[in-house]
Length: 206
Ligand code: ATP
Ligand code: MG
Image (cartoon, rainbow, N blue to C red; front, side, top):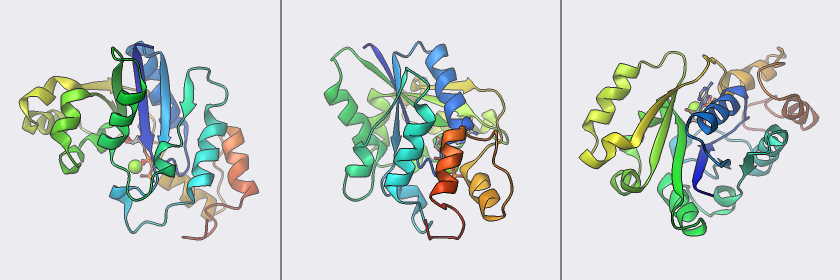
């Protein structure tokens, strides 16, 4: 394996925005596989009642089941304490062949938070980022953020246009709570898992 994609996220729940982005990145950057890494306790979402990791993990497993190039890692959900991207990426470097290139796939909105990440300089030094644009994100803003990064980081971020998808986990959770349809926003198996386990019906219960 020469090129590995890592897609981190809360995946609460995973949806077609994530899946289309990962698939587009795989094709465009000729990735051998993409590993989805559901977060444990996300440092950027403190205070928000994130669904139990086992549910988010299983929803992700169900969602990627039909793509032979997609896998799911339990790394972050098994790690105690907060999960930091830099630690996750280091783990994949340690467990992959020496010449393997790692591409961290993220939405452009998440890249905009990059300056707040722990050890951002070390991370940029070793990892390539694929920043997917999503509706409402201005790429000029991304350029401005990239320009502020340490010199070695500026060519490590590749913007990737993905088919416009206004889907978000926040909207899906809201729809379930309001008893509105979530069909065609996420894979059917994941949709059924949500209903079977009565997720997102009330804040903080799931
Ligand atoms: P929430 O609404 O709870 O914040 P989310 O839909 O943003 O959830 P996350 O799990 O937070 O999903 O996102 C994981 C990664 O996927 C992030 O890098 C985010 O920017 C990216 N992402 C989320 N939704 C989309 C989308 N529709 N298109 C492209 N990338 C997306
Ligand atoms: Mg988000």
